[in-house]
Image 1 (cartoon, rainbow, N blue to C red):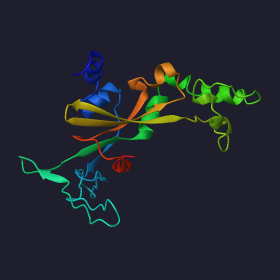
Image 2 (spheres, rainbow, N blue to C red; image 1 turned 135 degrees about the horizontal axis):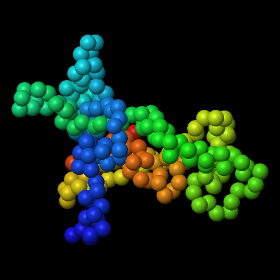
Image 3 (cartoon, rainbow, N blue to C red; image 1 turned 60 degrees about the vertical axis):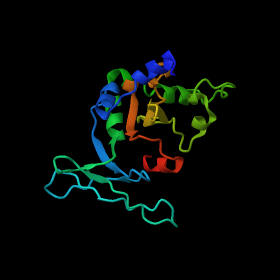
Amino acid sequence: EMSILQQNTLKQIPTNITSALARFNLHPSTTVYATCPLCSCLYKPVFKPGLSTAEYPSHCTNKPKPWLPICNQPLLQLSSTGHCSLIKPYVYHHFHDFVASLLARSEIDAIINEPCDQLMGSLDQPAPLNSKDIWDSEFLRTFQALFIDRKGESHLVFSLNIDFFNVKETTSCGVISCACLNLPLGICYKPENMFLAGIMPGPNEPPGDQLNHFL
C-alpha cells in the first residue's frame, strides 16, 4: 500500500500528453513518432507533397541485434472507423522551441546568464574546495573554448533526467526531461521551467538498451 506522500506524488503525474503539456506550461511544436511495441524503435512521420496526413511504416524494420532477424512487429492498428492509428505513439517536444520560449520570458532572460558571467569573473581566484552546485566544478572552469566566456551569447547547461513512475500496480510511465542549470536551484526544477522531451509510452518500462531510441 502506498504512503500518503507517494499518493500525492502520483496525483501530480500527468496521465496524457495534453495534461502534461499544460502542467509544464508548454504550447510546443511536436513530432509524433511511431514506437515499436516490441523493441521500442522509433519511426518519424513522412508527409507526402500536398498532404497533411502523416504516414508511417506498417511494420518495424529494426534489427535489435546484428545477429537477430528483423523485428517485423506491427506499428499500426485498424480503428473502429476503419482508419489506421499508431499502436504506441511517442510525442516529442522540439527542444529549440522550448529554449526560445524560456528566453522569451523577461524574468528568466534577466538571470540566465549570471552563472557564466560570475564564474568568468572569478577565474583569477582559486576554485572553491567544496562545490555547492555544478558552477563550482572544475569541468566548467576549464571546458574547451572556455564555455563560460559567452561573448554576448547565452551558453546554457542542462541536466538530462529519465524517470519512471508506477501509474498503476502493473503499469509504468517514463518521462524524459531536462532542467536548465543556469537558473537558481530554487526554480530550475519547477515544471514551468523544465523541458519535457516526451512521455515514453507504457505499459512497461523498456530495457536499458531500448532507451537509446528515445534519446
